[in-house]
Length: 435
Figure 1 (cartoon, rainbow, N blue to C red):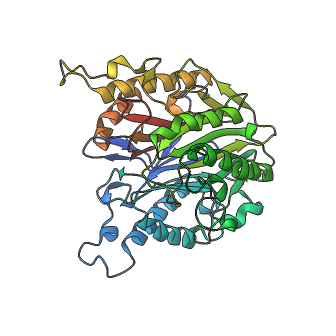
Figure 2: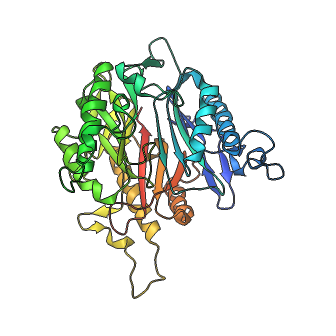
Figure 3: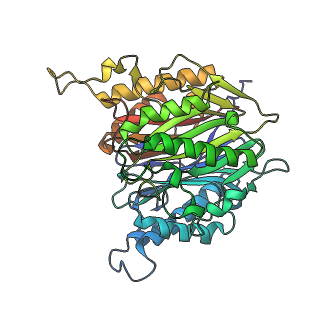
């Protein structure tokens, strides 16, 4: 009798094929005890443009406000994905949002509170110049668990919890087993008044008494991350993944000076994501950092080195934490910057495809990191693509389709105003299941 092929380690949830383009999209992925929902939009049936009741073209102001309709539809879609994966809204451990306009945020928060009630997990919200669908203002990513007696969401509300505005209502930290998820933090001090904390403001009348990005980064680490990690039984050394959102290209290198200093034994997997300007709740904020840590326990962590050149010196290439592998942000670079194959030849401007070359190189490096961690790229459970031009999305997807033929993918793509290496037009942030 022929042997049965082994069951795949990950299972796409509610997969659809988006036309035109033949894009195989999975709005959710089930991987062991985890359920991932990525790139959720206010669509009907996870395909096509925005749902008719969201656009309401004939009577756009007849019922609920436009952005509330969009948010409500996204949460209905999220509930459907989680149910398909054997979980539910009560077991969400992280939720993150991109918006194209700040006007949408309050309506989204209203919908989130109405849906999740007192279980709003750690969250990060940032502004982006563009999303994939015409008229789309909100995109959501969520992670939930399939609970058992020892693995279920537990809210951690440290003393700083009172800094969270009631309209947001999220927990600063939430644990599931040894994993702890932390909300995005920026350099505010609500007790001292609105706006940035006094410690990170330039002295009145001075042009160079301190560098704002350094001051904000130090403040977020020392006054926010360290204290919240401590409340969860962790230290900075326990961080396994950080997403850092920055609005100014000149801030990347000085941020990294501070970041490396606080992680002398190696950084967590780190992705630096450019945002719009302004990009955060505080108009003057330059940075926001969200974190995932692995508190001391039975779950093991391992730093992965596959010889991949990171975009910034000193960043760890990837970290395996238990059954999850986190890759630092991937760009198509070598020691000379953008790889030669992706550089247009001015003598032959219509030959070749830079985005295709970039994606080929990035996915090859991603596979190397997966192999070094004992897994494979086919087990990818979250794909976050950051494009400087969303018109390159289809060509980028075509490389995915050639690399993982026939596979439905948990794709999300947002537009960013720049990337930190000249000539690069796409960056990937990947999470991979590592059973």
